Amino acid sequence: MAEEAILSYLEKGHEISDSGQFASERGIDHNEIVNVIKSLHGFRYVDAEDIKRETWVLTDEGKAYAAKGSPEVQLFLAIPPEGISKEELQKKLEPTAFKIACAQAAKNKWVEMGKQLISRKVEKVEDRVKDLLLKIQEGQVIGSEDIKALKGRKLIVPQTWKGYSVKKGPNYAPRRKKVVTDLTRDNFQSGEWKELEFKEYNYTAKGQPLEGGHLHPLLKVRYQLKKIFLCMGFEEMPTNNFVESSFWNFDALFQPQQHPARDSHDTFFLQAPSTTKELPEDYVQRVKDIHESGGYGSRGYVYDWKREEANKNLLRTHTTAVSSRMLYQLAQKPFSPKKYFSIDRVFRNEAVDRTHLAEFHQIEGLVCDRGLTLCDLIGVLHDFFSRLGMNKLKFKPAYNPYTEPSMEIFSYHEGFKKWVEVGNSGMFRPEMLRPMGLPEDVQVIAWGLSLER
Ligand code: PHE
Image 1 (cartoon, rainbow, N blue to C red):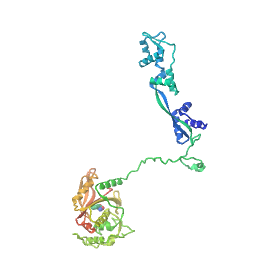
Image 2: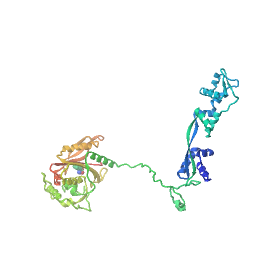
Image 3: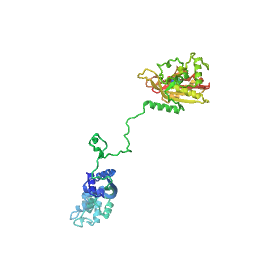
Image 4: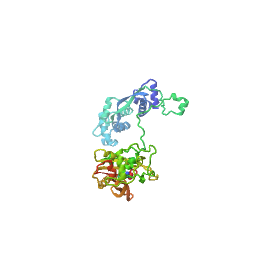
């Protein structure tokens, strides 16, 4: 109704100079008019300009007088023609009103304040104060002298009134057009789409906040572990190759070629490309030698080492393949101590069941320095696992082809009330490190665990 009133008024060529006046003339609530003006202005149906006015509103006392009459008139009316004693008169009025009433009535020369009696001086009086207050209540304008007097008696207080002046805007239309948000099949069929006006896209609107979306639990743990390694001063190894040659995955790690892990039951071999293109030849020779006939105090495995076996491509079965590449590279430069880690995927040709997949993630850490001992390994493991909240560790002797000594790592699980295996570790063998070219007094301590665990 407010919208129709505004638009049709403007249609006749008028302008609204004062929304307040416009509202009261039509008996519409001014707030409603203001809301409609704001909305029409937003769509440029109208141009609106702010107008501000100082107006007056009644205080509680003012409101009371507007309803019941001013106290001085109440007092006057309470005086009988024959006069009345002060005490009697006092009883007829409210105590707070009485004092004011006396003062005002005397000032207006309405009453005679005799020693014994209070009597009327005039026959009748007009309640101007009440009339003025009512006018203000209705929004009428009154003279500045009267304002001053009412303000002085604290019957009115100023208030800023806000409204608008309104005229036609660039998009003016006598009726608001419904803008369409969706193009429907019906729109097409009826041909109506040609005339339709579409709601504009709001490119700055923010989308609905997403309800779902969480980091995968594995990614969270991965991030946590990465942070632990970085805090401990470890560098991340490049693990971005799932395909590896048997050489780096097994031979470089002094894993004999008949080892059951190298069987296709345990390892995925590649059909194409089935073999690696190149290997560092002099190093390959040293690896062959150590497997066949030993060296550096080792007897080796005493078998015919076959290059074809080493060339076979596979999906890496452990990230230790990456460690062997990194240590070989390290050995090609003048020695400097290193701390490396990796967290990435490995593959094993295993029967898939509830707790096993053919692929999982390994976490591996290694420290390469002169004069390291098993105590250093145990110390680093305590440091590492305590950062994961595992403070009770136990170690059990184990076997890996590439480490000696080797230790399985157990942690006490407070929930299960038992020891749980959490990783595997050891000191890389000289049979692995020396052919690479690492100096004799350099040891490497290393450990591995599974992310999924
Ligand atoms: N490569 C071992 C495994 O797959 C883990 C390991 C890493 C063990 C480093 C010792 C040293 O379980």
